[in-house]
Amino acid sequence: MNDFKIGKLNFFLFVFFIFFSCKKNNNTINVNEQLLHSLDEKIKLKNFYEEKKKTGIQKLKNELLLNKNNDSAIYNLNDLIIEEYLGYQCDSAYIYLDRNKEIAKRNNNQTWLYKNLLQRSVLLSTTGLFVESKEILDKINPEVLPTQLRFSYNSAYECLYSNLLDYSGSGSKYSQIYKSKLAAYYNSAYRALKPSDPFYYLFLSHKNRIDNNWKLSGQNIDEFLKTTKPGTRLHAIGSFCKAVIDGKLGNIDSQERCLIYSAISDIESSTKENRSMQDLASILYQKGETDRAYKYIQSSLEDANFYNARFRNIQISKVQPIIEKTYLLTINNQNEKLRWSVFLISALLVGLAITVYFIYKQLNTIAKSRNELSSKNLILKSLNIKLDEANHIKEEYIAFFIRQNSNYLEKFERYKKLISIRLSTGQLDKLSSLINDKKNEEMDLDELYYNFDQAFLRIYPNFVNEVNKLLKKEEVYNLKEGTLNTELRIFALIRLGIKDTNQISEFLRYSLRTIYNYKSKVKTKSVIENDDFETKIMQIGSISSH
Image 1 (cartoon, rainbow, N blue to C red):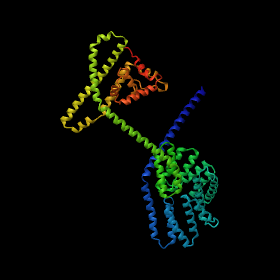
Image 2 (image 1 turned 90 degrees about the horizontal axis):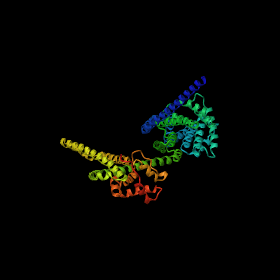
Image 3 (image 1 turned 135 degrees about the horizontal axis):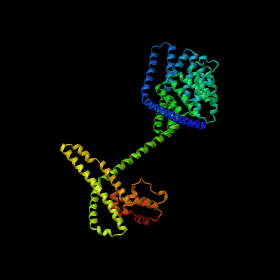
Image 4 (image 1 turned 60 degrees about the horizontal axis):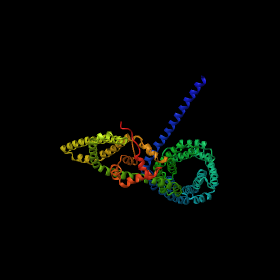
């Protein structure tokens, strides 16, 4: 008994755990979707943040005008402008790097000159000029490098080999060489810093990541992110690193979320040299969100072109054609569906235009049939089963056409009264709308076919099953009870004795060619000779009259 209670308790705990896990997963998806909507809005505001960036840079440039004769002040202001341009626009960064280089040479200031070289090396590797970047770094003797630039020196090498690893791919024969170099410079970079320095945890995370200590790397990057502010370049870098780690650990939802955070911070800080939007586009493409993936990869390409980053353009060019092709294919499919919709609507409008003529003709047929039935009533009672069957058919269709006639007379009376009211009140515009409204006519045609199907299947309830026996197994019809499709409706009319293709064409609102095609299509599915098919159709029996 106790075992039963314990088992029951464990079962409820299991159900609760599953429910909680599903709910938590749905909440994660909802958070990511909300963040994606936020990112969509941020993309629309890219020009706003760019103007804000330009305003900040212009303020620094205005300060230069106030310090024309002070090389130290000019160098420092240029340095701040360079930092602003490093992730924004590389061509402008080169201009101010050249200016600071001249100031450093003019003042024979080795610290300024080394810093300038390190900044230039980072900029070159960022834009894909790896050889030129390495040439600068190889010429620097780290033994004579000022202490305050040791970190920048290791960081520049880290930037070079990190970009080389991205460019070559993890599977290339050079990847292990680049990883070894990276491990050494990550180790040197973080050791040159104190734990109180925010960059300490960033480079410690890089070191643990290159050593495949992914969980510890994630903890390090969390510490780094605590020191950054959303909307800044550093927060974008930290969030991107967090996304890489989560992706490696299999936390896909968290990876996507961190990429969104990074992309938002890139936009808000107007950082054009970025990677998050590109990777996010790839993830969304794999999830089937083609529209967003296309929009994000286009945004990423726009940033790369603005920054003039050859390296990023090459990376994007590997992904963009795939996403763009799928996006354009989706658009073409939608356009094709739209064209078919227009065609079908046009066909329906043409069919509705001749509905009144068809109804008038059918009403005359009903009147003649009623007269013939009255005069031959005594003869019909003495006929055999076939005549009973014919009588049953006529009874069903008399009721069918009476209902149709009654319905149309009622609709006509209401229509006439409504027109009279419109005319008497001078509402000519509403009268015109009423006359031109084809919606009611379309509903009448659908009702006619529905009533026809109902009446026919009351006479021949096994008609569909009997037809299926004449067809190959893989070609049988599976229809909603009480309805026929166009192909079966053609042979239903033939079973009723309407073998004139013109009459069938008029009733079903199809061309003669289309009727012939439908008949041929059904016959090709049969297991008997085509010439015998209609004979077999005529042999399908009905229920008794009463």
